[in-house]
Every structure is written in C-alpha cells, then in structure tokens.
Amino acid sequence: MNIPGRHRQLSLFFLVVLLGLAASMLFSQEKKAGDAALGTKKYSDYERSQTCGTSCHVDFFRQWEQSMMSQAYTHHWDEIEYFTLAVPHAEKDPKVAGVKAGCNGCHAPVAFLAGDVPPPPPSANSRANESVSCDVCHTITGFQGDVPHNFNYVSEPGKVKYGPREGLVSPAHETKQSDFLRSADFCGTCHNEKDPYGIWVKSTHLEWKAGPYAKEGVRCQDCHMTYAPGRNASMSKELPNVAQHLFHGAHDPGKVRGVVELRIHPDIREAEPSEQVRFTVALFNQKTGHSFPTGSAEERMLWF
Image 1 (cartoon, rainbow, N blue to C red):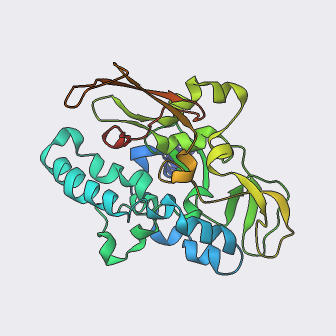
Image 2 (image 1 turned 180 degrees about the vertical axis):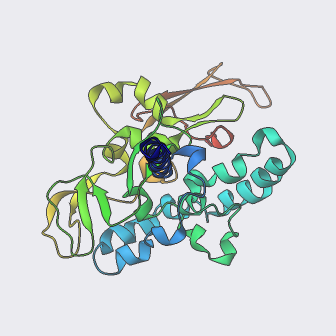
C-alpha cells in the first residue's frame, strides 16, 4: 500500500478545494457597479436620510429635503415617465428591458441595489421614496469603467461615511476623506447616460469635460453645491465654506436667470397691421458649464 502517495493526493485535493473556496469568496466580494450591482445589497444596508437629519446633520437634511435629489423617484413627472412610459415599454421590447431596473440606478438607488424591480409606486411610501439619499452618495467609493455613466458607481454601505474633508470625527460612524466625492466624475455616474442602442441620451458631464470650465478646474459641485457659512454637523464648529445640499439647477428660476443671453432679431424694422414678420432667435450660453439646455434627451426643452 502506497500511503505517502495517497497522502499527497489527499493534500492536493484539499489544497484545490481551499483554493476554490478562496476564489469563490474573492468573487463574491468583488465590487460590482452598473447593471451588475442590481440586487447585490439590502435595504437595511443603508441608513435612512431621516436618521442622518435627526440630530447630527440637521441643516444638510433640510436642504436635501427641498432638493430634486430627494424627489428623484417621487416627483410627479418622474413617476409618469417611469410607470407610464418606461416600464410598459421595457416589458414589450427585450432590447430595452434593462430600463425597468436601470432607471432606478439613479432615481431610486437603494431600491435598485436591493433588487426591488419595479419598486412600489410613490403612493405606497416605500423605501424607494428615499430617492437619492444621503447614505447612497456618502458610501460611494468610485466607479468602474473608462467613463462614468449609467450608474456605474461602486456602492460600499457600512459604518464608513465618505466626505470632502479630512480629520472629521463622528460619534455615529467612521469618516474618511474622498477625492472622488469632490470630483465631477462622481456626478457623471448618473449625469451621463447611454441608451440600449449605444446613443448618448444624456451627456451633461461629458459636455462639461469638453468645455472651458473643466479646463479651468471648475467642478459641478462649485456651481450646484455652492459654499456658505455653516456646520458639517450640529456638534461641529461653524465654518465659512460648507457645501450646501440644495443642488440648485435649471428647475430654479434664480439659477437660470442671467446664465444665457437671448437675442431676438425681426427681419423688418417696421410692419403694417396684418403684415408678417419673421423673427430670428439666438441663444448664447454665457455661464453654464455644459450645454443649455442639458439633461435627458426627452426633457431637453427650453420655454421662452
């Protein structure tokens, strides 16, 4: 009987099994992004925004409540667009089936990551109603791929919360400074979108990248999260330059006022009653760091 040989065979067998288990564990822990992240988390992995705003981040929570980020899933137009247009279309056409889940990669990220497809409508008041919540943004650590787009962010929920400043201490969680959170690429994970046919139907971040603001180092956050005196948390000292979480954009008249120059030229200077006059309208983008209007192709409208 060749006992040593048999021992070697058994040892080799167990080594192969252990390596297989290790590889399986590594694969299961692999960071997933975009479509691959669907259903990889649980609702309970993420704090509710109300929890953040109860005692520590009161000001940020109140600002967020007023912002479109808090309404990304519940706003009436988004509800119509998703439940009346996107979901029925996705169920009929296999080519666009992915939008049934994919829309919420950016409009209701916690529901998407929890695999809730489609989530209950806003009237059900489920956790999908949290829309783009505090914990979603402050637990994103990067993105996968060459270009940030189509919710290809990496979400790592847990006790570590990521922010723009170093050296902050919280009694509720660990904090880490994140350069990615401060970058325009962070915004690009949801403000660039390529449709199932390979067409860029939203390219706000790419427009910025090709424009003068990017070359000057002006980021999305510099315009849409402007600084003001305030506190990062209720127990921290007041600072002169705290990023506001109102996310003002084209939906705010005050933000749009003065950013474009409108010129109207009639083809004749004087006209008689009932005489036709042709007007040429020219719009000059003076201050926005991207195209104007921008955003999703189906919403890219400007009313004079």
